[in-house]
Length: 365
Image 1: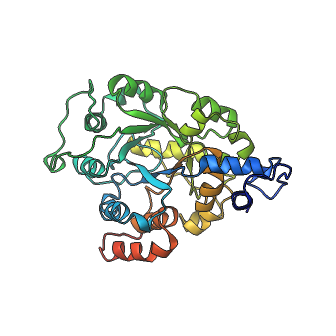
Image 2: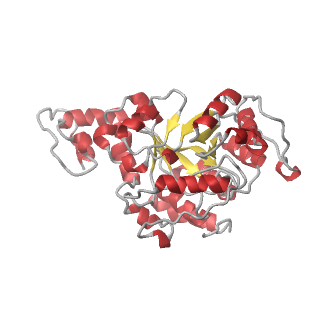
Image 3: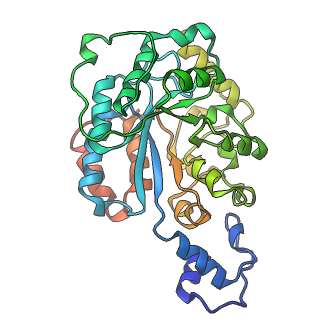
């Protein structure tokens, strides 16, 4: 309401200050309507860049969705763009965050990315890597292919994918690709071996203190940093970041995890062990809603949830522009609901849903 009012009555109200109007709007307090109108004017036309799940897991969904997104832009919000797809194949030892199940081959994935000029991110956020794991041939080959797709090179060990994974060729636009990383050991290795891949600091670090987040944002190694979702609404602190820091922050918008969870780091470590093929018991989630699994409706009730309206009315005007949608471990039908909610205009959501459903490329769970 404050933002809309500022734009409507505009400049000239130099003596009217905005009072408290509720959580999430602290940025408006104490400013005159004229000052707020100027801030809104400065941020009109800003773009929300979305980083989407399922690089290897949901390639078939994106093969249907991307032609709709780029071929019918009037169906989608004009202030949003798809910046990257992220994920990892099922047998990636460097994987983390979620136990990977992606089966699409690297050449096919890169071809799709190149066709639409979208960045690809390998989710290599394993937190328990040891030096001997850095020579893993499959993960090195993936990094090599993603680096070469952007015109880079490497000094990695030689490895050849199985025949079924070499079909196709990369054509079209050359875009920078990256790696989502947790391990400092892997970070150093990637910087030395694949210098053309940009790096993203993983939310699996569980940096819940704002001072730790700021230190991470100030590290030159990272192009992007995904904060712990519990810092999503720390507006008084977030607003004080420099624009360079804001440009690097990439908010996880649809986390369903209990905001009071004390075992998030242990959960991620369990995933890391499974990715390494180490024998371990399943992590038992103690959330009161754990038995439900992921539900988007439940995520919307999370105090840290970032809605479409929050992005438009709070985060973009505040100077933030990068937003990550989680969902690699879910069914593609659920991921489609994320794409509809965050990217698609309401009047066209049914149309997009029908186009995808009629293609019969979705799995529900």
